[in-house]
Amino acid sequence: MGRPFVLPDLGEGLTEAEIVAVLVREGEVIREDAPLLEVETDKARVEIPSPMGGRIEAIHVSPGETVKVGAALVTFADAAVGSAAAGAPDKSPAPATSRAPGAAPVAQRATPAAPPRSAPGPSPPVPSPVHSPPSQSPLADTSRAADGAPARPERVGPVPATPATRRLARELGVDLRAVRPTGPGGRVTDADVRAAGAPATGEPGPAAAPATRPPVATPLAPAPFQIPPLPRFEQWGPVERAPLSHLRRTIAERMTLSAAIVPHVTHFDRADITDLDALIRANLEAARARGVTLTLTSFLLKAAALTLAAHPSFNASLDAAAGELVLKRYHHLGVAVATERGLIVPVIRDVDRKPLLALAAELGALAQRVRDGKATLDDLRGGTFTITNIGALGGTGAIPIINYPEVAILGVARAREEPVVRGGQIVARLILPLTLTFDHRVADGADGARFAADLVRRLEHPDQLLLEL
Image (cartoon, rainbow, N blue to C red):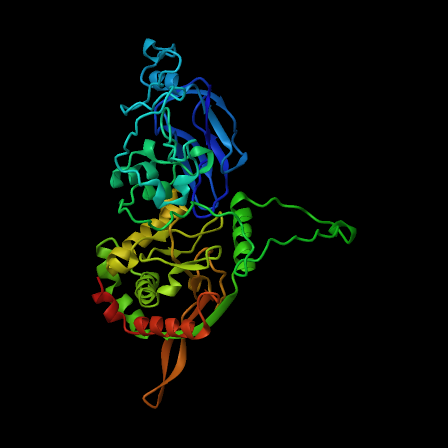
């Protein structure tokens, strides 16, 4: 029987992708992790690697088609036959693949064989090297044997998991075959691996959260609403219809979701960045000699990360179903980048731990990858807070929409010289307009004012930012 491979969970709430290219042919024998398809999401164009080696039995998608997460992409031939075939060009079945009825299939890698499904009598317990006790997580108790004991997952052939999940399993020392999957199509997710790698203490631990939660209607999350139909505009005059791109459709969906679910509130403030601008200009050539372009955005990133560490409720996500605030102890900041395809938000990780020159270099390289369409999914997910700087385009301010499921976003407009009273004298100072938009469910106006004041203080003392590691 063939084994289908479905579009995996792409993370960050992505639910679909457009097929750009199919990189294999029916009947072709490929190896595990070989390029399978090229897809485009609302964030990037990426290659999807093959989760296993074997012969492609059928291809279910074509370029230009939009598919949902969980939809079948290709079907591999029988796992046992495919695994043997992947090792040699000869497509004829190798003798090693033949087996007696009831015997365990040949796995692609040397691992202990799973017990026969139809073996009579009770099987002796087989300890899993790192698998958590089933009592630690409700997810591990979803399947039980007739005697009430937790049923051990049985796998044949390669385990469906993304390369990132496989790498995480190696880092945690988790055997993927011992992990009970919760992802679409039986795929093992990062959350499954972390749950399996949790230390066994003998005490009931916190339940492992599922990779995704179904939509719920609670006081914190309103029920879905119906969009009324549009009138026939043709009755008043000629019209033209232009199809939305895949990226624009997804942006529309995500912005509508954020605006509908999150009660936005915006705090306005201004920072005197005269000294910061002078510091940037004074060090521009020295930084350029090191191959780094020093910009205001790199200072904004550093100042925002340090401010988030002092105000952790803005570096969080609200779990409406559980009624909990998820406080993130890492600071991965997204920066909105305008491209020909639309607005894309790449993420710089651990901003609070990196010096300014390193941030500036990473920001420049990351923004260029995004504009060239070469950003990977890892470049574009995991953000905890977003900065959108429209200063290069002009304007006196803007109220951005929160990048759900984050709880806050910082908007930055163009800095302008303005008359300011200092020491009893009217002088020209460079003033930067700032707008902090945040989720009113997790923070009040006073919290937003304190956050903005702390951020302004850091921007107005740039020498302190340079000393931060």
